[in-house]
Structure formats: C-alpha cells, structure tokens
Length: 257
Image 1 (cartoon, one colour):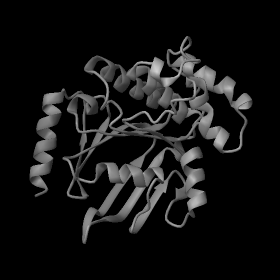
Image 2: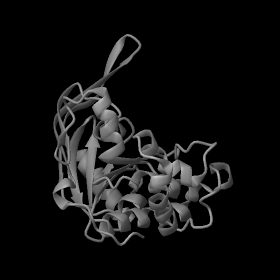
Image 3: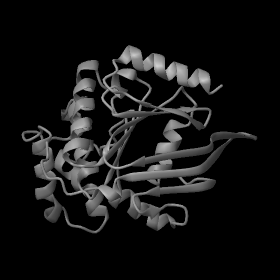
Image 4: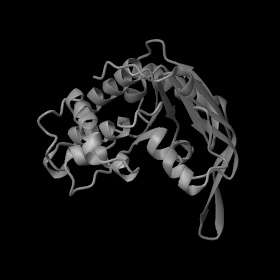
C-alpha cells in the first residue's frame, strides 16, 4: 500500500444538511432523501447502511457530484456542491472525490494502466505524464504484472483494484465506494474491505462505503444507518463482530420507526 500521507486532514470531511432528493416514477414522485443530516470529520473508514430503498446509494451519488440535490447543502472538504455548474461538478468528480462502483466501470478496450490514467487524461493531462503515478499505484495494489492487461483478462478482484487505483490517481481527500464487493466472492471481498481500511489509515483520507453487509461494515470505524431517506442513527463499532452489528443496526432501524 502507498506509504505517502499527503492529504490534509481538514479536507477529509463531508457535511450534509437538510438534503432532499426526489425522482419521478411514471406519474408519481418518489422521495429518496427526506432531509438528511450527516457530518463526518477527519480521515477514517465509514459505512452507510440501510435497507433497500433507504436512500444510501442516492446519498453517495450526491456526494460524488453524480446527481444534484433538490434542497439542502452538501460540502465535500471545503467545497459546497449546491451552486456548482455541470462543468464544475465534472471537475469535482475528477479532482475532489474518487468513486468506486460495484460494476468496476472499466473501459474494455483499454489496459489496466490506461484505465487508471483516463480521468486525468480527460482532465487535460497527458497519459505519458500520469503513467508513472498510475504504474506506482498499480504496483502498490499488487498488479505489477497486470498493467498491460485489458479487463477481460483480469479477475473481478483485480478489476476492482484497478478501479481503486483510478479513483486514487488524483489524490482526492474523499474516496466513495458503492457496494464495491457486490460482484466478488467472499474471500476476495474480505481482502478488498481490509484494503479500503488500510487506504484510509495509511493515506490519511476519508473512505465512505455504502453497503448492506455487516461483514463489510465491521471493517469500518463508524456506521451511519439510513431509513426511509433520513439518518436513523450512528454506531461506533469498537470491535463488534458481524452478528453484533446486525443486531445493533436492526435495533437502530426499529427505534426510528
């Protein structure tokens, strides 16, 4: 793993205040978020949990600048997303928040190295300039011998590590992960959760993961529980095992009814 700790801790924060988000489904409006308040200060590994339809992925997408809130304020580091133009949101996505998706989102015609440098290339920086940095990240993630392989020649775990390297390339203070192990087997998933925890610790950054799995969330320091589009509660793990966390999450959801 990278040993460089270059991120300023004051940038490792997210602030969500009174955020609402609705979507149209046919002729009706569905409220995904109903006034979410969430404050996370400083580096660390955090999870957002909740049942299906609780709004957890919607919240992550708003933090990433992949969608915009109907009302409320979202700040990532020292940047408020509320008044950013689409062009400014694009720059935010490339420079201020790395995002890891369940489906990897690698371009099949590009090598691992080319996939990692792609966001910087789209940002006007040359592949040749960024290739050494991308190569260093891939080597540190155990992919020294896979850099010239295309995604179809990589395992699921290797593809997700390429996606992590891509998300880290421009050294964002916040790394967002949406169900990052949903397409991986249990052994590979466990290695990836440990890797994300190590990234948060060694790179002095905030890693925020959406998950429905207690097995994943126990690797985090704190869990933020969503129910029906609002934050129902927060849980400090303090060495909980998955079964204990599952009980605490269920109790938190029950108390929020």
